[in-house]
Amino acid sequence: MPHSSSQASGSDPTLGSGPFPRLLPWVLLVGGLAGLLAAAVLTVEKLAILRDPSYVPSCSINPVLSCGSVMTKPQAEAFGFPNPLLGIAGFAVVATVGAALLAGAAFRRWFWLGLQAGATFGVVFVHWLIFQSLYRIGALCPYCMVVWTVTIPVFWYVTLHNLEPVRRIAARYHGVVLTGWAVVILSLIAERFWSYWRTLL
Image (cartoon, rainbow, N blue to C red):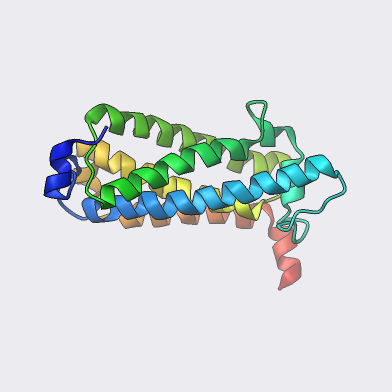
């Protein structure tokens, strides 16, 4: 719950100093809104498939970039309901926290630990979905990839905020870590579907 004193000061004292107080609210707001939009579109597409099994989603572009191939698999309902519903709930919270921080709100330690738990669950779940997409389903969902792209930095900057030792070590290299993370995932995608990509060259 926001502290009333934070509204007077216009900043969250728990954010500390350095680049993270400036980055974190924007990462949460922009990442949350992008993830929310992608999850909402995926939900609409999933409902369309449920109404008409022959429906071709707008993000089914070719044999590799094919939302339909992903959304019809059991992995798309890992907890018994469409995965995008988790995204709608989670990213709405993330975006709201980012907007609140930009407005000058401050949150107690327990709140940040709760956000850390949610972000950790999200990043673990996303990497499970990446593995499933690459090595079990054999197709990529573009909207899902938007979710991957925003979940990782949300997790990373929330972790930097909550864990002082990590923040001290990564102060100068926080962007490098994210870049390396992205390179690894892109390399796995390139290697997995290289036989298709090279037909486009």
